[in-house]
Length: 241
Image (cartoon, rainbow, N blue to C red; front, top):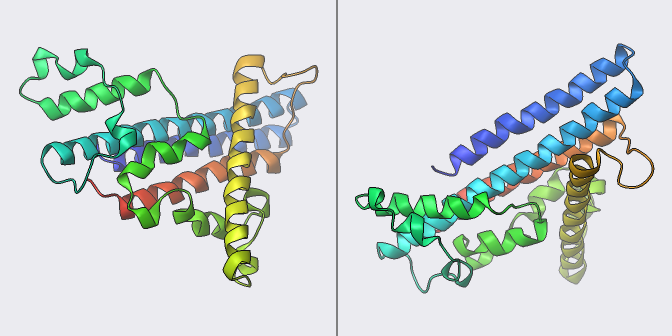
């Protein structure tokens, strides 16, 4: 499975979330109950978070396997990245006798087994999981901050591209670092909405959560933008295919 497969699956899944947002608007226009409309919006956000988690998990399997394969074949320059070298793989998968003639496939299956017990819902973990396949000048998240700012939402990064273009030196670097912090915080908040919906039926406290059409649309689109920018960055700069 190449990284194109995780992207293809993500595109399909995030479009399902967009469809649910549109359906919630249609339901609202048709006079459906307010609670139902809000539930559909929250479900769309939860689906978008699930699409993000699935993408990061599948992409990580591909990146880890690619690095290990390149290392085994002597095509990896330097030492194995520490985050990948320390990754424990299930011996049962690696040594499966049915895969003796396909050792690299056994390696991929072992990696997939890891992710079946894990998730990628913590945005703070992502850089550790993927920086091993990126060159020093393209590490996360600095390598794609401009792309996220270009999305144009101050709610997402705290600054627009036109505002950024007026800065230089330390002020520019400070704003970029703040943008990284803000978008990560925003994604964490969206993931928490998913948790509240999945585990508490949208009632983390006493009141049931509500999202307007624009709020739900923004949450889904932010995840869509993040994964598109991330995938383009990984594809353009990865050190192992």
